[in-house]
Length: 204
Length: 303
Image (cartoon, each protein chain N blue to C red):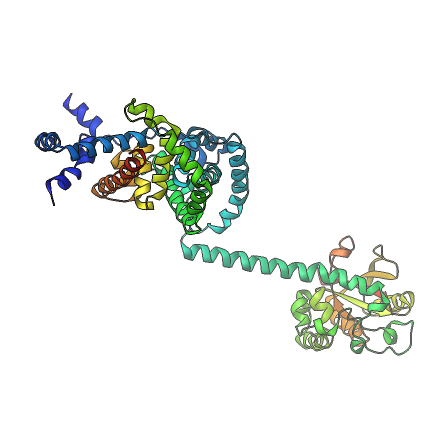
């Protein structure tokens, strides 16, 4: 019984995608379509959180899958395929975000939204005495949170996205980003504090 | 660091329930007594919920189609990537020296093939073109002026068939294994000397036969036929190989007369040349038969 427990405790995490990935590497093109079907919504969502725009997110997510397809032979199976895929997505997302920020993409978008939208946002902010979950689900709050994410620096942004939005464990994030778990946690805490201040400011 | 800052630093662990029991008690005790920290912790929790409750954004409807299009392009280019990454990608990974050796081998093989095709195919066509195209008649300087016409001895001319610029010195005997084996060394040297003057055909077309250029092929052939009994030779074949204005004559002669005949022919303007590709259906080059040697002589019109 004890040995069974130990076995299950130390058994490496199984990768559901291993067989499909092996088929891909052997040249089975349809196998990659299965992986696309399985992950494209998650990757798109992650891409969207990085760049905050559907068109850019679509392009970024396609780039991620293309890169994964081209580099599949380099996937050694040390980590799960999903971890590897999200690692690619995070790296590409971070780079795309930096690129867009350098070009003033987010500043221009903020300006384009204009004062009208800000006013409508302020009008639409619900009364804090109502159910907090209802408040958080509102479009306006979602927008405030996304804007706050956009304002984070890339190192903090990637951790918030991976942990709070995509739900990866600290261990997986540390593996993806090649960071110690402690650094991951402290960065996450700082990122949440920044978002908290923006949310508090917007809702107060 | 104030107590409030220290407690604020533990919000994340407290929220994720990663603090030990003792720390948790201390934190909750502080939160009970500090309204600001309590408010802050409330906002912290709300922020985390706001982040985790962010709506999943659905990809556009055409996403899969666009992705498939991109993947199709990537799949096409992966054929090129095979060559690009041949030394680095598994499962084709090769040690660098092996890879370089393989490339060198491919280069040498390619060069050899190119050389083969250059000598065996292109010149053959070129020589045929020059045979039938008076406008492209090459290297008049290399010709030996004929004395008279219509007979073998005085009328033969050498046809180099190739521009002088494309010629290179070489040993005709080297191209004539049969000659070099069966002929006395002095005769071989003689042929070599001649070949230096007229190396082109031997170099380009190859080896074992003679081309004789004459204004009257019939008379030249007849002259040859008259010589044959004197050297105990005989005519074994005569045809035009399907080419107008060209006759190929096969003669069987004693090997010791081979040198005499070829010298005679060469002295009167013949030059060793091969009959390859285009004449593939014609008799093969010189062959031995006991002490006899089979020699093919091609007669072409003087142009």
